[in-house]
Amino acid sequence: MNILVPNLGSTSLKYQILEMPDERILARGRYERVSDYRTAIEGIRSGDTRVDAVAFKAVHGGPKYRGTFVIDDDVVAAQTEFLLAAPLHNRIYLDAMAAFRDAMPGVPLVAAFETEFHRTIPDSARWYGVPSEWRTHYGVERYGFHGASHQFVAGRAPVIAGLPVTVRIVSCHLGGSSSICAINGGRSVDTTMGFSPQSGLENATRHGDLDPFAVLYMMDRVGWSTSEVREQLAQVSGLAGISGVAGGDCRDIEASAGAGNRNAALALEIFTLEVRKTIGAYAAAMGGLDLVAFTGGIGENSADLRERCCHGLEFLGIHLDCQANHAGSGDRLVSRPDSQVRVVAMTTNEELIVARRAYRTLNHSA
Image 1: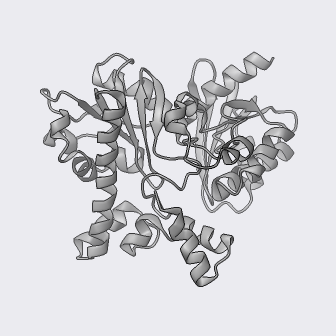
Image 2: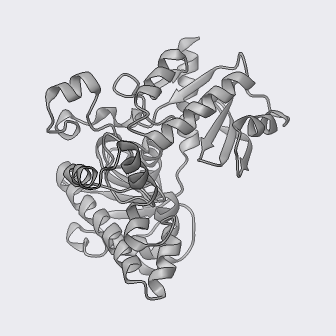
C-alpha cells in the first residue's frame, strides 16, 4: 500500500509517499507559496507513483478523537468544533482535507491526530483545576501535541544511545513550534503543551504558558475582542514578542543577540531556562532520568542552544561532550562517556509514524 503523507504549513506542502508495510520512501517533494492545495495535489498526482491512501498529521479533534481514524463527516465536525483551540493548525488541515477529498475521490483519507501518543498521560497530569463541566462538557484538559515526533523519539532515541526502549526519556522537540514530553517505558506520561498548541514553552510567534487573567485584563482594559487577542497571541508573541525579531526564528534571534540586541539575548535565555526547568521537573515526575533527546529544527541543529539547555543540569548526571555536541550531524550521542544521563541529537520522522498509524487503521477497517 502506497500512503501519501502531506506535511502542511500555512503556505507550504511537504510530502512523502511511503510503501507500507516495508516503509520504503517512493517519492518526496515540497511546494512553497501554496495558495491553493489543489495545485500542489495535481503536481503530486502527475508523478509516476501510485497513491492508495492519504494520511494527515491532524492536530486537534478533542476527547473523542485521540487516535487515528478514517476521515468522515464526524471527524471533520470534531476538528471544526475545536477550531477555536487550534485555529491556525486545524484550519490548514480542514482546508487540505477538503481539497484532497475533491481531487482524489475514492482514495481513503486518514487523520492521525497528534494527541494520540499522549492518551497514556495519567489524570493527575491531564486535568486542570477548572469547574468539572469545563472538562466533561467541553473537553477542557491537557491533550499534548507533537505526538508523532515524540513517539518516533521514544523508539529511536534509545537505539542511538544504546539503551533499552524501557528507559526514562525527556524528548525535546524544539523548533518554530516546541514541546517537551516525559516518556517512561515508551509511554507519554506528561507533556508541556496542554489544551492547545499555544501552551508550554515559548514558540516562535505563539506565547507559551501565560496567566489567563493577563489576557482577561488586557481584553477588559483595551476592549479587544477574542479574535483580536487570538491573533496577537498566535502571530506576534512568543520569542518574537520578547526579542522584537519578526518571525521569531531562533537563527535570526541568535544573530540579533550577537549584534547587541539585549531583548534577543533575553529571549534565548528565557527559552533555554524553560527547557532546563522542564527537564528537571520531568526527571522528578518519573523518579529519575536515563536519556534526553533533542530533535526538531533547533534541537537537532543548534549545538549552542543544546549546550545552554543542558547547562546547570550536571546535578542530574547530564554531561555534554563539547566536541561531539558541536561536531557532526544527524543521529548521534552528544554526551560524555561518563555521563549518567545520555544525551542524543537526532532527526525526527513524523511522516513515518503517521504512515504506520494509517496502515494499521486501514488494515483494521478493511
